Image (cartoon, rainbow, N blue to C red; front, side, top):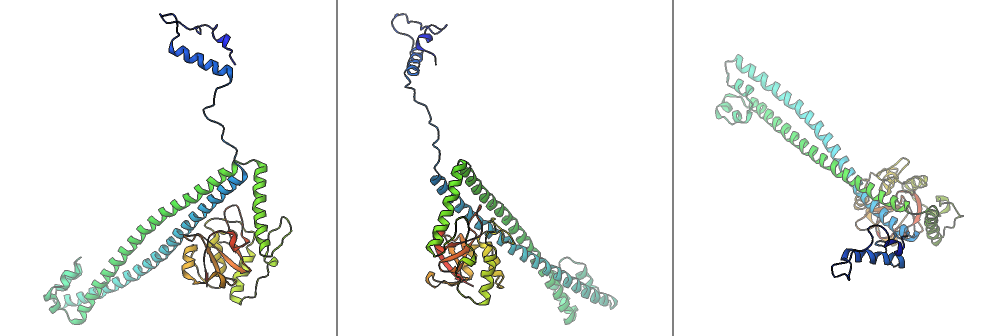
Length: 367
């Protein structure tokens, strides 16, 4: 640190006096005042260092970000489901268009055959119809109606109807293709939203030291063990619950397939947008498990809730699907005794947990 005495002996540091000879210039007074502050240690920093986050603070923030990421995942799943439906509709429409083109070709061949017969008979009026791009106008011509036999008029009407069907189906396909493109854009936005939330959570986690991260993992494990203990499931340290640790009530063979599948996935990592065979998000696990019983469900928790028969919380049975948050953004498979199997979030895996551990319970459905 430069001492005050040194500062006034340095070249250019001696203050110039005003003509009155009594006071230094204003700029010099500021320099002197700063020097005094440096000597006395009274300088106040303009900005303090950011406080180190506590494990509790970071844990709460990460949990919030993961909840947002899961909500974004469900939006992603919903758009993906919509796109799958549009792809199917588009495929059906294209098959229909192919059939209509074949019918149109047959109608044209029939009309060509009749026109040839009329030509041989000396009636050239139908040739104009055959060569025209506007069959409707000729069909409305009274003279043509009088010149064609009734069965031939039916053939011409069939041609016109097939032309209209082809045009309508072609228009429908174009509209569905446009909707599919909009859905692709929405899907990309939803994907970016998920990835942004997860990246935010990773950044928060990176702010912790190694010991703090270990403390965070220990706190998560302690919460899991505490929740299970409250439901009567006691585990040795370091081990997650399996279906053998839980007294699952007897169920019918159909539901048994669902629960058996879910139990087999315990420990599989969470992956947003996944529905197996080795990675799952929440609604992906539910649709895969119930698929074992022949039930086809959409890959979206809110849509799944709308399809099942509503069940009161007090009437839950193993196999029922429980839903959380408003709007619905998470679900799991109930296995009895207040427990469920679910795919929690990124960084975690499929596990057994108390229904009350997730948060805002919304409803349940039976399939």
